[in-house]
Amino acid sequence: MSVEVIPTGTVGAEVRGVDLAAVTGAAIDAIKQAWYRHDVLAFRNQRLTDDDLLAFSRHFGALDPPPNQGAGRKSPPGYPDVYVVSNVLDEQGEPIGALGDGEAAWHTDMSYAAEPPDASMLYSLEIPAIGGDTWFCGMKAALARMPRALVDRIAPLDIKHDGTYDSGGYLRKGLAASADPRTSVGTPHPIVIRHPMSGDRALYLGRRRNAYIMGLEVAESERLLDEIWSYVEAAVYVHKWALGDLVLWDNRTTMHRRDSFDPGARRVMHRTQIKGSGAPRRAAQ
Ligand code: SIN
Image (cartoon, rainbow, N blue to C red; front, side, top):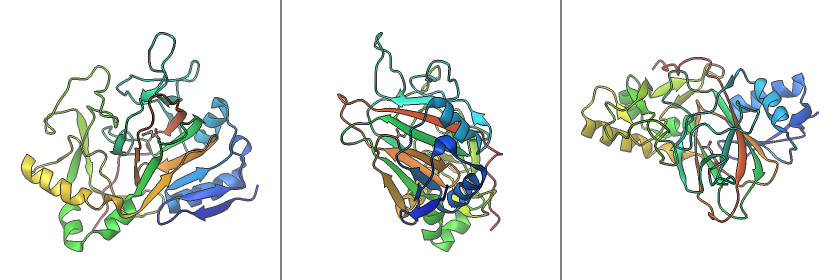
């Protein structure tokens, strides 16, 4: 296979010339190098079974079980490491997947955990005619766009990442509602981190809802968070899905969000995620 990497802007690249169901060691190395550089990779025209998706995912590390979303942990039968994102209901009227048809707000996956997943991949099986685009923002570019004084101020600080609500705004199954970011479930992580492989610095924000900058009064934390979040769309790639697309992203250097779509349309995506290789590490100033 001859891997061709076409950047989609400051963040993201489309990778051509690769059949992910039969990818080889040399091609995997080339894909990883492109991924460290571009943070989001899109592969078009793939034909993957869940076994193919799992086999490709394992090249990036150990698999991480699906998150507990508002709909609970949704997997296809026999594939507990595959997570279904879908608005489709089964015969009993139960959702077969998570996140429904609404907008999903900017987030990075499971940042409320002590060791969040390094990577996630999403593969399209059924898509609506319009809507449901997935947006990615580059957190290296967001940090680079910030004034030096703001970077110096936030570099020693930690954000507590809330684990109460999923990105669709749904309360995670079995959890108690909370509007107090100081006491809700979650984990603090440094705001400015260093990527363990590329050495690049990036902002690490997680989700805006119930975020809290440790040690500040809540009002001051909210003000500073609003200022930080005003930089997140510095570099954006919008993925317009076609059937058979797979998108791989780095949770340490990007956030993503999803547009809403027609509730009468069907959207079925299968996702995997790769276990964190460690807690996000603070970048030295
Ligand atoms: C996700 O946030 O993992 C799902 C994004 C999407 O449905 O496009």
